[in-house]
Length: 549
Ligand code: SF4
Image 1 (spheres, rainbow, N blue to C red):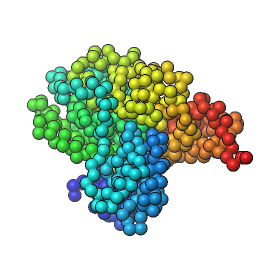
Image 2 (image 1 turned 60 degrees about the vertical axis):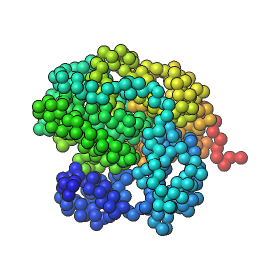
Image 3 (image 1 turned 180 degrees about the horizontal axis):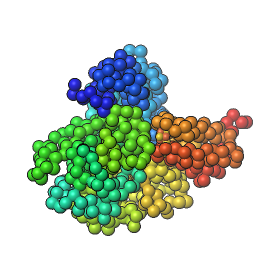
Image 4 (image 1 turned 180 degrees about the vertical axis):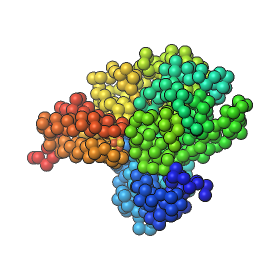
């Protein structure tokens, strides 16, 4: 009843059924289909698309161990062995007493405290074999009300001065004191580009949405932070949620939207009560709801929609498909969401960091912001740093610093390579550490993974491609089949079966996948293979043939 009977309620309804029964049975799917007025096969199609909709019974405690590269580097495999030994099952299995299910999962946004795992919705980080043994014992004793360890970022916050100095709601106060078009003009002049990775100018996006015709416009906060190695958005939501909601409200004022949605990734379920509390406090302070800040007719509210586990939903059109109750498959563009997005209406989709940052900009002015950074990359940026460095964490730094400078800041000197921009970004070798973090050179969503000299780059590539194979939505043959073939190719290279011709074939396949795939996943998934060939070919060719005397 609480979700309604429209198709956009499909995922929330399935999540409610799962919360009640532990899984969504075929019977429940048929019932939901009848309720909404769609076919059972459509419900099944959506249910099977998302990792965190259970289609069969699972244990009372579902343990999901993160297998992103930062976790693997910090000992996830020995933690995995301990879990298997303690529970007497393998990954993918449930204990005979129905108590525990053990699964691998992709990045859960805890890379700087890796290895990490979730037990149901609680997060446990800095895992060691003895620590997971204790967690299992606690679970067995009815889960002892253990507290999650999220949000513990320690001294790395010393750098986030612009966020901590922001006077909450000063941006919104300033926005409503001028016209919507003046707010958009200020944002355009500031040069702010979307912080999710694509870097599209925010002012241009808002301008398009403000001019587009629609009965109801929407603001969506993309909090589906799924790029392996990134966790800055989780930290922002945990510490600066008010700034994100302030940014959404400024956006609503500027384009004339009445409804806002935070699309929160399922792995961040632990943040939901906190976010709900902040929203409620804002409603009580006349910062949401009707006639906001006593501006007659300025009505806007925000709700939270939980994702269900699909990396590709970080792409804005896939996210909208999922919000409408369908499989999260990217749409063809144009039209762009700013013209025709959620329910066919003009929609602005902005990332968490973008929304928090623009609150600072509207408060302090475009000039202040654009005085930092470079010609095409204005202002400051948050970087999530993990891997082989002594001070992992979230860093706020101006655009334009070199990889070398970044490594010095985070204690990663002597690295062999750095992954800039997550798995879909670029693998930069040591001889290129003078390159700059900026759209002129290395544009980046925020994930940085440091690899020291002893890391095996083929193991890195295998980990990336396993992730892409798992997360491909399957629409494009090149992405669905091509990534699988690339993974098989990397595994052959790991066995020492390498020749120039074979490498050339892999590169040619990589280029085809990049060229013929529809969205950012397929267009960037082969980057690691291309980088291995360009920068680490000698290492690959020198690999001994497995089994050879
Ligand atoms: Fe789906 Fe991959 Fe095609 Fe993107 S590139 S639409 S993830 S199959």
